[in-house]
Amino acid sequence: MLPRRRHELPPTAGLPLQLADLLPGAPTLAADVAAQLGTPPLQLACSGTAALLIALAALHELKPARHRVVMPAYTCPLVPLAVRQAGLEPVPCDLRPDHYDMEPHALRAACDERTLAILPTHLAGRVADVDDALAVANNVGAYVIEDAAQALGARRDGSSVGLAGDLGFFSLAAGKGLSIYEGGLLAARDPDLRERLARTAARIAKPSPSWELRRSAELLGYAALYRPHGLRLAYGNPLRRALRRGDPVAAVGDDFALPLPLHAVGRWRQAVGAHAARRLPAFIEQCGVRARRHLPRLRAIPGVAVLDDPAGAHGTWPFFFLLLRDQRHRDAALEQLWQAGYGVSRLFIHALPDYAYLDGIVPKADVPNARDFAARSLSIGNSAWLADADIDAVCGVLEAVA
Ligand SMILES: *Cc1c(COP(=O)(O)O)cnc(C)c1O
Image (cartoon, rainbow, N blue to C red):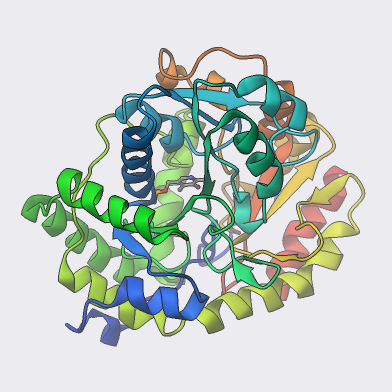
């Protein structure tokens, strides 16, 4: 058994906040990130999910006869919940074998004249196949929304992800890189659509003093605890408690409930995000440097595949996403690693149709590749505190299991 690491590592690389970030300042977060990424103006929302809700509401006004939204069957459960809250129907689509992209034939079978939108998803910072989604969407007259919640800063052919489709969104949730505890950014190339999104947001996401107070307190807690000394309290101990009671869904924070909060983001949190965003380009770069250092070692382990980008794409590296030979090997590795404090975890526990609490929201569908993905995968957080000795320890376990 691997001894418990003295200080807990996080499961994903977040951008740590500094004391000076918490001072008041200009609420320029969305504009600053747009300038850094070279995107058209971005719209701030109170979460990635809220950004998706706003996008769906705006698109549904344009095509009110269409009610279905197609997404990978292995993605964040908040995605089908947002679709449901928007009054629409989630349609899970199976994955390509051993891959995060939707399977092209399954995608074509899932889409028709009832489809409002297709959500190619840049999972784990990897760059998804948006072109195939666009081809199908053009055929059936649907929109494409890029789910880039996990991929702020990822680029393809020189430009930011989130702009090849009609819309794209990023998450600013805790642990997803740059964070204001909960937040999201919405991108759209077309100025008319951006105006429509702004009008929709003004209508359905009004300021809420009580939510803002709560999120501000949570952001202070995040600033204090997102560091090796605090993560045991904020992350490791709750994780181990949930695992001890046999609740992996709670352990990874996969348990959500409707209704999802929808409100505007206050000025102070925007200022905090703007201060921290000055360090975003260097942060993304450093994650990439660490990834390139550790990837060869991880790839050399027999029976381990590490997800990577297609040619011409440069994803971000919030964590490494590994596929092991089978569920038995994956579970044997997690037996030693999940509770040991090395930032090893699972991403989403189930394929969407297999979450009990999504019963009645996500239709029961046969999605064998997504189920296989859920059963064989694990993640290794690529935070700044991940040292060579930590990767050595993790690789030692993976090699022994292999
Ligand atoms: C986290 C996540 C979301 C939702 O973003 P929030 O900011 O947490 O609301 C959507 N899609 C994916 C793939 C995610 O990982």
